[in-house]
Length: 444
Image (cartoon, rainbow, N blue to C red; front, side, top):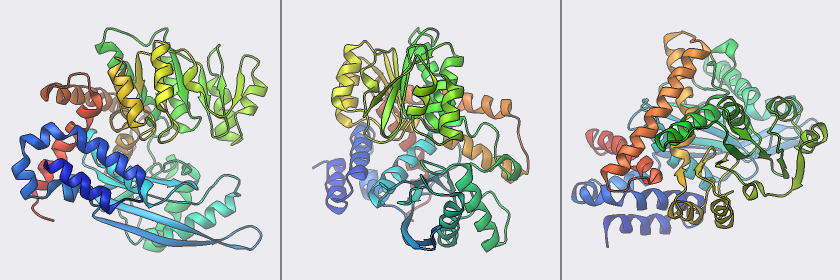
């Protein structure tokens, strides 16, 4: 049995109840085979893959809080510190009823490679809770966030572990958490990113993941002799990533015709009205039915279905495993040229393979949605220097990082005879840097 197969077998046995983590580990290790086989004796002796797939530490804790009716509620909080070989742990806090340890581990594992790809000194981690901020008052959200941070603050710090936002964790939640951290620890430091602009946040952070997705998509198209101008784009999701991906795509001359949320989706053949979408989602925190009610050209559909719309480029920006094999077949049949992931692992392994085998240019989330964490790292830099850069400065650095990521993953794929396989290229390029750092630092 090869070293990769041996480790995968043990990972599956040890984490049998965590399908998302197993999916992520299998996808990464399978694509790393050429690199591992070229260094098998060294990596096996150093148990490199065993150390890479086992988190440094993981925390699970109770989060009690009081709702507006005076009733005590109890949620579960998580933080997984996966790997800090190249820098402090860095990764978001997801607040969603679906959150469990397996999902947090999958996200933290992915974050190791994504953070490595940015070229910035940040390691991989992730956290969150099964708390659902939807439908809660500001006071209830504050009560939860303060209780959550009361425990989490024991394990994080500006040079230790720097959490950020994710699904369900926006500027409001980050503000409440930062305030509680500061009160308990008595220090004013860049311990969280995604902060408000008045207290250490970075310009362009809100836009960063969506903008970064389009910068790498644009570079992909350019390197294949295409441009974004005039292209039809379908996007899933209606959160931060989807909104700013739509905005940047339309600035580049493309037409975005779909978006979706957990209850349904919009098809707008005239192009998504980003200002209206922001009003519905960011201000009113409402469903997409309100978008359809306000815009005559929009068609609202229950359930899922954005991938059936004919397009040149598909950008899944909602959640994991949302683009299935049948969706991939529909995209191919409709002549889709490129799929770039704005969310974390939104495309199933079967769908990914089908797209690649049928000539669709596919860039996975580790590379394509790295703009958010890259800009978080730029926020850390500004906090450390007690400086604030302009929007243009941050945006320019973000664009350069995303262009560099594209060429690094392209070069890594070519180096190991897998030209055009950007998934393998991202895993290899991310892994090589982390592996070198781990070997250099000894058995720790």
